[in-house]
Length: 245
Image (cartoon, rainbow, N blue to C red):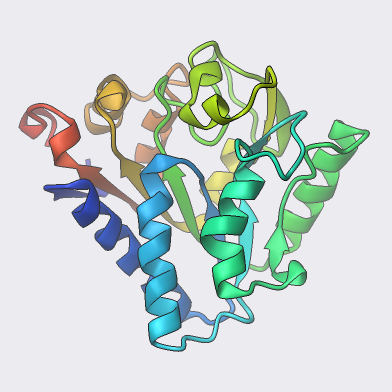
């Protein structure tokens, strides 16, 4: 596999390596567009990134941040939402203006119309500099769930049973059955992809990225087709990875 794989000994080391890539992106292009995943895997990386931006007084007034996905049916003040996560970890600390942030309204009356709105706004961006992704327990990317085929554009999707057990959803009492996500074509627009691998329950999905398989049944495996994907791995989460490297 030609894409870059970086092994880090701990979650902290993985997070610092990811933060370096995020920070380098905004330094190289002060008008960068960056897609942000949510959840445990990128949380500490975002905190280190924010810390570096603030310490160095880096100008991020012209950076555009894009929310990767969202659970449908939750109020955006619900701690389980991706909206809440990004607001607390990135947007508020960096004082990101509304015009710098492209996101889904999870309570839009017409979810399909909301997909079309986000798709049009995303397509209008000149370049997507970086797409930050984590690996789902079932190998999903964003909420692009395993299946016989995958959708390229922004879409609503029924959640896989494994996805319904996502750690973020333990923070709400509501039942969530659907989500909205950027599609695979949207993700592949990224000039560079940063894939974070953390959590022993994701070893099977990670192996599909590291070995020779490419299948829509494990969406993360398709990233091997991207010309510039960096996979940063918290090695302490997994067993012996050398057989795939």
